[in-house]
Amino acid sequence: MKCQEAQSSLSLYLYGELDFATEENLETHLAECAACQLSLAREKQWHTFTNGQVQEPPFDLLAECRQQLRPAIARENVPPAANVRSWWRWGNPFEISATRWSSQIALASLLVALGFASARLLDHGSWRPFTVNQMGLLNPANAFVRDVQADDKGVVRIVLEQESAITGQIDDPNVRSLLLSASRQSDVGVRFYSLQILNRQAGDLRNDDPRNDDLRQVFFDSVRNDPNPAVRLEAVEGLRRFSADPSALEVLKFVLEHDDDPGVRSQAINVLAPPDHDAKITPAMTQTIADVLRSSPGDEYVRARCSQVLEEAKLPVVY
Amino acid sequence: MDLVRAAQRGDPGAFDELVRAHDHQVLRMAYNLLRSEEDARDIYQEAFLRVYRNLPKFRFDCSFSTWLYRIVANLCLDHLRKRKVRQEEPSTFAAESGQVDRLQFVPEERADVDPQRRFQSAEVHSRIQEVLAELTPRERVVFEMRHYQGMRLRAIGQALAVTEEAAKNCLFRATQKMRAALGDFK
Image 1: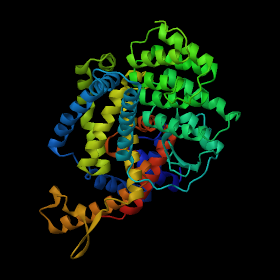
Image 2: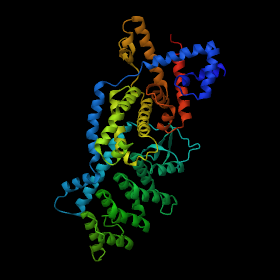
Image 3: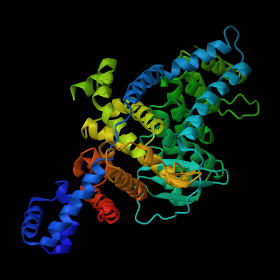
């Protein structure tokens, strides 16, 4: 071993992180080289200096953290469905009307969105766009996305695991691929905001644009499988542009029959049968609504809205 | 592992025990990396909330502590990156006598009997803080994990989702910077 190699290995030697053979060679070299012995002594010295820098947290900080964690965990234990339902009953205890339901749904959705937005704003502080714009050898399908953000000019910033960020227009194919990948990652905020940005982009696509296919698949997957109701809500909204599509009708039906969150179910019926009087409801949609009504979801708003649509279509209302 | 499984089944006592088994280390790491009670408190809370939310999905692909450190390390990395961007919490502040290193006011217990030693100790302390602040967020986290938390490079690599070799390179860069800044102190 030569001096240069020996000296560059000294820190790892002190940490005990050299492999056996390198450590043996280094010790042999040290035994014969006064200069490297001196370097080792200096290395030990700065290690010793820095060892003294470790600070124990103030003694009451741990207790304080534990105390604050308990109520935060307790809040996590309240099922989202219960939250939404309680707001619902509070706002509409006796009478039912489509208009008031809509406002309550809007309120529930707004609460979900506000919760998300405030948490994200607190988390991220002010955002300054980076200028990094390199995809290199990155494979979007395997990239681990840590954060996504978009401004109102369609510029998206995607933060990746390896201390890098991709910034580009929302319709850039690389940006889009990363967003599609991010919509399936573990961080709920990343999934939610990816879908939101994709939803925004979807509004600019023509119906025959081939990019609709993977968008639709992402929305389908999230609606069916995402554990978080806010993400599912966003994905259901994404299905609005596909609501004439038989496979989208199947997915919306699945939501109405199986989703355990009333906010998500309400969003699904509003996508399937928009309260707007000018909305076009196709025979296939009407049939899906009749099927949903027959399978009797335990949700008054959904049942009432289904009945309303069938009555307007002059079809028998069968529970 | 039994504790983790019990917590996954929804046993609140098991989750509480898991927290208590690891939270001192989590807080210590966050506090040393961020040098702020408030930030360390935020990291503590967010880390354990993420553990709580994602525990049902934990599949034992790695040890629980590796998974926990991954969460903590990523939170700290994000925080350090934001600091780099915002340039917040400079190590010095303006005083009537000019720029003063706020870390001078951290007591140095072992040096307080000897004025010369105390001066030198404050100087070393200041130099160390400067060079620590100059490390990249990832170098800072790797250095903290290896030097102060005593974690092995393999575990650090797992926690940061990089190879052991990448963690080793990162530590190497950090120690080179430390050596360059501190190697000539006597």
